View 1 (cartoon, rainbow, N blue to C red):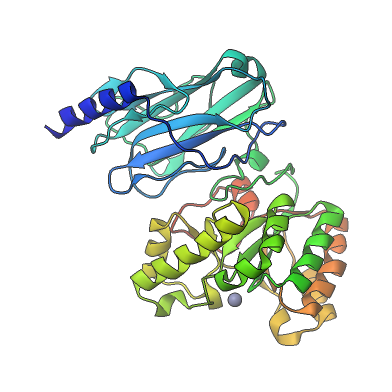
View 2: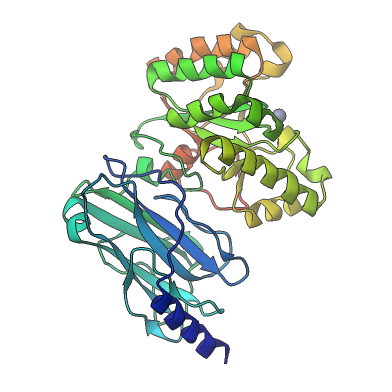
Length: 392
Ligand code: ZN
């Protein structure tokens, strides 16, 4: 019996005290603490530890999970405990601090509870939500159940986030780790916001000017990088992450997704993600298809890779005009709340345009946010989705 074997597996795993292997925390609490989560799916096994706030949903049913506190200050004791409701079995015994719970077989999770222990409990709140019936639930706090159990409705995804005690629900800024494990910083989801995006780089002489312009106003942007440019510009990539910008994928050598076979896309996109992660520790979850070319098959492939496709709705044509004033004028004449604006950080004229337009946009009241930040404030993204703007 598959399910019996699953239970035996679980008991064995619990007895062996298997730990997840978290990579890096992009934390939510003010001091940098977070909860890293690893999810097991029947087809792909363990997906790997994901940072605090990541909306983990690769389109397959989770069957098991584990969590671990990450990045907390020295001397803060305690940890994180969690409990899952497994279809056909009900609530399993709670486990904590990296121990796996669930099934290695195909039994489905229906709901999840997460809470803190010891000093962690005194210092922070923990929130969990699940993807179920086609959407993300609201946040459940400090041991409250997330998801509906007992009616055979499985969950498709899970997201866990730590906050400072009594700081309130992870807001748009917090949830911005969604499909983009990057700390997005604080912004006000009720105010206008746009996502500046830069393709085809990085190119140090241009990208560093763009980053400096953003730094001067505390703005963020998203960089869709050509994988083959990454290794020689790793300092730029690390500076993006340090600034709270989002790293994105623009394929290894600017290949058109619709002209690649599925296995070619898996190879070139994965190679690019690997290069970016090696440079900065963050694995991209957003893809800008070169030429904006994406079809049904490539969306499916991106979904299987856990990525969303992000195009744009304001095209500056900076690559064509190479004229800074044209780019500035085009943006200021067209920009609206929720826009995704396309530029290329490989032209000097684009850097000049950014130096002018960034303060002008801020003066008009726009918050400069990442794609995932914008998405989180406006309904979110799912792997395999295609997005061109996020209107309020
Ligand atoms: Zn491009």
